[in-house]
Image (cartoon, rainbow, N blue to C red; front, side, top):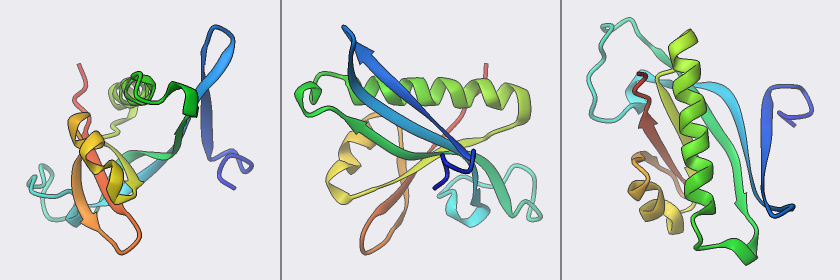
Length: 128
């Protein structure tokens, strides 16, 4: 839906001509109270924080456990950092099921909410 309406962009990752994964990103925001333990830098009036949302990420079954997902996250984080330098994106965030929380934590993400079906996680963008 987001891609069809021009609200997201999907990048395909290839290895030797074969698609090994994809990641879909879109602009979003997170509520100030969803940021976890970090205090607001702009004061109480800052109700929403610009963020890049990882809407979907998938790795081809034949390439799992070979670093493809980690490389896609590095790409997404790098893009978010570039956008941050230009327009002020502060976070990158995603929704995942409980089975992938440890993987995302190893990649620098922290949990900011747990729901029945999924976990919301974020990572702060530190622009150069």
